[in-house]
Length: 312
Image (cartoon, one colour):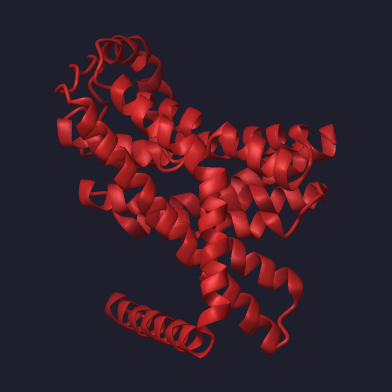
């Protein structure tokens, strides 16, 4: 199939899916409005408390004199491991601590300020695309699996999956990034940072709520045509990662952890949309980014299975 034919087919399937979702919502508005409400509650309880403060704090941190010092220290190591600049590794570290979509927003800011080069942009975006320990250990480990250990297994597998694929991406680098530390970002007033952070986290909330409702539609349609329950769970996880993980409530088996590691690392359509809202305008190609996330998800699932078999 030619590239043009593929795009035409993909566009037609997307339009068909949107039309079907619209008809389902119009047919059962109260039912799917309740799903949206559940998604909003999920965001408000599990995402908002951790994400909003971290968005503000990381934005403030990148505008201090500490940022170029850290970047300068780790630039040589970063260049060898991932073929990216110190600024790119700083974005990755912020993502590892804070989670989605802090890394994507940081990459967008750094690219606009000239700290990240065009050749390293995709590699930095892949590195700065992680969930944080607050979500994986707190919400998924303790909340869904009732096991903090399971949460740390997921987080470690998630990080290993991301770093492994990023390491192999270095061999496609066209040139070595500049090792010199970036200059401090232009100062921004606290009200401006607060406004930007609130708008960002509201965008995340809206995305989670909408895709949670889409997941409910997938479940309803799957039940109507008698799809196997594991397939329905997998499809829901591809749409919204928290919904997919919640299907394994209180059941931290190695296979369940491997599936959750894939969901969280791939991110699902919901998280991909959140990230591409920042990365797209910065020039990151959506198709390549999604492909990389798929590879990271598969790698994380493999690591999770091995770790769970050895630790649980």
